[in-house]
Amino acid sequence: MYEVHDLPGLNFDPFLWESLSDAPVSRIRLPHGKGDCWLVTRYQDVKFVTSAPRFSRKILGRSVPKMTKHFIPLDRAVSFVDPPDHARVRSVVSASFTKRSVDRLRLRASLLMEGLCVDLEAAGAPADLVHHVLSPFALTMISEVIGVPAADQPRVRDWAQTVLTRASDEAQAVQAEEAKQAARDYFRQLATQRRTEPQQDVMSTMVAAVSAGRIENAITYELHERDDLLGLHPQPPGLGVVDQPNRSLKVIRSR
Image (tube, rainbow, N blue to C red):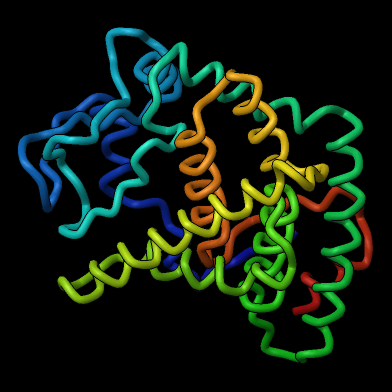
């Protein structure tokens, strides 16, 4: 194992650490929005809040505490759906993740990671792990799972960058709303295509569920918009799990 002594950015946030140890349930005020909110930090408490029927996820249509002034909600994403609708959507999506499907994804992910690490090695030191590995890995895998063709993946990534980057003024907020609408239009077109040309992807599964009357069209679009945009937003370096001790791990360690 490697010991790192010079990366203060990896230190746990002091406020969250204090909340976790001394105030696991606390009332706080966020920079924007009306009213206070509750911060819950311990696993059992979080599990209770997210599963007890007395709490609701339907926060849209009202002013809520938020971290940014220009909050761009994804209106009917599964994160904001209460049971039993939440369970119904999850049951539809889970059909795309059978053991056979996961085994196929695991093989694809392993091969993709190997290729990205070759690119990382070819780039030489110092290595940019986010640029060469983390970002393209998320872009490719999430897009393939959902059903976004390779040719469309760069523009979906650009929408994610625009929508999920904190807007500092009204102009950036407008750009984020425009990107959000472009993404919604795109996934509607993709859903229409999958009705006549189904593939082995989540979009095809969701479209079939709509045709069967199990879920609504709007939920399909919002689910894909949310998951693809959140998953494709470039993330800072983090810890990854390598399925097998192979060349990928050796390349990353060497950099």
